[in-house]
Structure formats: C-alpha cells, structure tokens
Amino acid sequence: MPVRAEGLPVTAAVGDPSPPPGLVVTGRYDQGPGYGVNRPRGSASWLFTFTTGGRGLLRQGTARSEAGAGDLVVLAPGTGHRYTVAPDAGRWRFWWTHCRARPSWTPWLAPYAVADGLYAVPSVPAALHDRIGAAFARMLADARGPEPVVVAEGRLERELALCALEEVVLLAVSAAREPAGVPEDDARVRRAEELIAADPGAPHTVRSLAGSVALSPSRFAHLFTLRTGRSPMRALREARLRHAARLLEATDLTVERVAAASGFPSPYHFSRVFRERYGVPPGAYRAGERR
Image 1 (cartoon, one colour):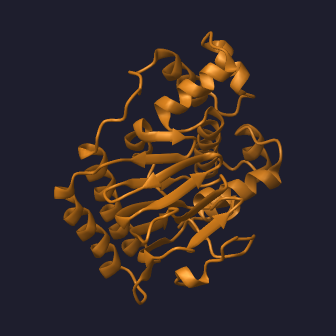
Image 2 (cartoon, one colour):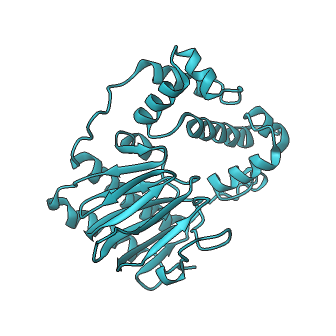
C-alpha cells in the first residue's frame, strides 16, 4: 500500500508507516519547512535518498549528515533515525527508496560510512544527475501506484527496481568525491571478518574479536566500522542470519536448533530478526515462501 508524506507522522510509533523489507517503495518529494519523519526504533528496510535541490538533514542514532544537491545518503535498518528539511533551508527536493539492499552494495558504500548504518556519498557530479534521475524514473514507471509514491510488489517488479537502484549506487560511488581519512585495507579487520565468517554461531563479542587481533575494543570497533560501514555486532548479526538461512535450506533442524546453532540464544528473538531480514518467519522461509 502506498505510503505518502502526509501519512508519515512526525514521530513514528510501532505500527506506523515504515515500508516492510519485502517491498521496494519509491517516491519523489518536494517538501518545505516543517516536514520530518522520526522513527525512534528504526526501520525494517534501508532508506536511500538522493537530493536534487534544497537541503535535508538525516540522522541515524547520534550521527547526522546534511544532504544538498548531488548527495546520496543511505540509512541502514535497525537503528533509530530521523530526517527533516534542514534548518534554514527553504525546500528539500529528493528521490527516495525504501527496500532490502543487495548485500553487494554495502562494500561499495563502506568508504562513505559516517557511522554505523549511515552512509553519505557527497558531491556526485552534476553531469550524472540526469542519469540518476532517469534511473529513479524507471523505478516509478515499472512499479504500481499514483505518483509521488509507487510500490514494487511482484518479484519481477522488485528486481527491475533494484537493478535501477543499483545503477544509482554505482553511479554515485564511482564518481563522487573520495572520502577523506579512510584507511587502506586493514589486515586486522579482514582477520576479524574471517573469524566471524568461519563460525558465526560462536559467542563473539567486540571484546573477543578485538583481542583476537590485538586491538582495544574501542579502536577495533572504530576501525571495523570505518572499513566496512557496519559495526562489528551488525556484521555478526548479518553473518548469523545468513548462516541460519543456509541451515533452513539444507537441513531438517528445528527452528530452535537453527537459532542456537547460529548464535541466537532466544528462538523468539531469532524469529523476529529473521523475519525483519528475509520478510518471512523461519518456518515459511524453509517452506519456500520467500520475498
């Protein structure tokens, strides 16, 4: 069901409009002072915004990023966020999409991480703005619903929309100004990623992973987030969910045993976060009901 700007409350509570991750919801807005959305508990889907005029202000947790024309700002799910017309800005004109991001996009966005789950790709050259706008326009044309908001629900519609959004991400990161202060590949971060991938169900913590690569927990968490665009615990949760999905596909283990083998001590918590990630509960995923 289309979600319009006027239907989004200034403070969003549980159950208020936050598009589910199984859909691709796209819109084009031109908002004035006073417009804003606040989701204290975050969203189940990613939010991509590309500003074409005016300025917006987006916050993820305690981090913030101001977006002007040519800026792509992305908010990952799972952390409280808020976005508004920037103070003293007359308008904020922008394209936006809520969806489940493809895993391949995170490494492209990682160098532009402002904080865990907040990515700001600045100053996309003006020569590419029309191409990016055309990609968003294709999303509008291929989906359903009256503008300014459309929803891609069917499998083919979603794939077409995600292909167009992938073009937006690629164009933005390939031509944007290089972020300052991003370190080269760090063997310690790579080693921590290998430890997580080798046994996602193990009782990893920031402290244990930091100790395994001879870093303090704070330094390790900072480097890991800077290099990957995700906090260590977000990366661990994603690895555990991927592991759980493989177990559901390839074994007859009960949901409770899949949860335990994937590092989730509570099957109820596992079912909730699995549904947020894959759009269906574990049992339905095993039965082939995947979005």
